[in-house]
Amino acid sequence: MRKALRRAETNERYWDRRWEEAGSDAAAFDSLDIYPVKYAQMVMTDPDSSALELGCGLGRVVKHYHRNGWKITGIERSPVAVDRMREDDPELDVAVGDATDIKLEDGAVDVLMAFGLYHNIENELEQALAESARVIAPGGRFCITMRPDNIEMRLNERYWRWRNRHRSGPMHFHKWLVGRDEFAALLATHGLNVTDVHYARNMSILYRVPWLRDRRIATSAESVRRAGGYRLNRFGRAVDGFLMRRRPQDFCNVFVFIGTKGAP
Ligand SMILES: C[S@@+](CC[C@H](N)C(=O)[O-])C[C@H]1O[C@@H](n2cnc3c(N)ncnc32)[C@H](O)[C@@H]1O
Image 1: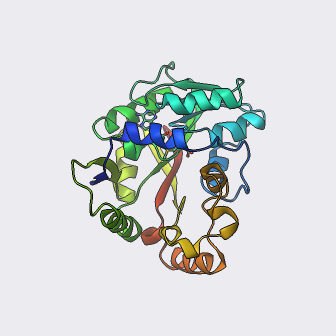
Image 2: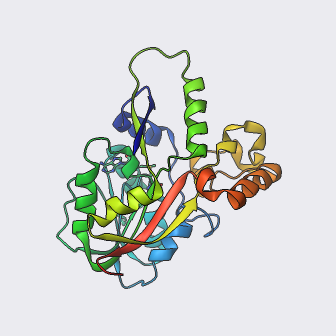
Image 3: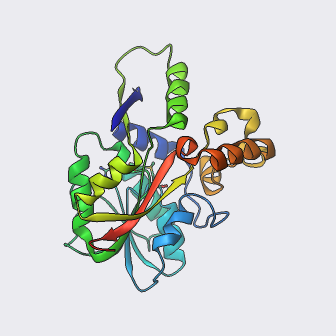
């Protein structure tokens, strides 16, 4: 695992500010074939089961499944995000909480999802994984993501170093980057057995290039761009598709780990 250090503010401040500035998340995705819902669908197969999304942000996944009649809880550290979700829909089951100390009983949920969460946790990652494993029922499923240590993420780091080149002052921890097998092995130490790994994208490195963005959504609010999966224009999609077909492990920016607590 490798630390990428490149933020002028702490993770906590960053997310509060980002959610303060973002609009509300939509209650529906533009397509079920985009990150993260595409991967959520792989574990959300039994509508009678109970689900938890840890680090649910502004709630795009929680809202989607709530709207479709699922029993789903969202836990999120940012009070800004939780207040916003409650304003949007008081019926949502969401709470301020920390992944390192989950206020749920052992084995409380059948499905646990965490999109973009664990790479944020600098010092207590093991504790967060132990807590996640604790609240999943035996035989329950998980869908969790981590940031890969690959070409795409190294390009991304270079981009941010360039963007921050005139900044002075301390730079804070941003995220962990991991190898696929290394993280699967770490999950296994917590009794979380990986059955599938997917190479995904939430946002392509090409999206950093303004003229490669889909102009219909590029100037919209962040919530619109999030619901649309940070869509590229035709040319951008062609290049991106080529890279992802040829070298998905090197050009994805998210590893999605799907698996079961205990024996699969
Ligand atoms: C990349 S965002 C993802 C949000 C959401 N899962 C989504 O896909 O839209 C990561 C979220 O994790 C939250 N987070 C970071 N550390 C956390 C922790 N220790 N416990 C709970 N949430 C945390 C952040 O506040 C942020 O909202």
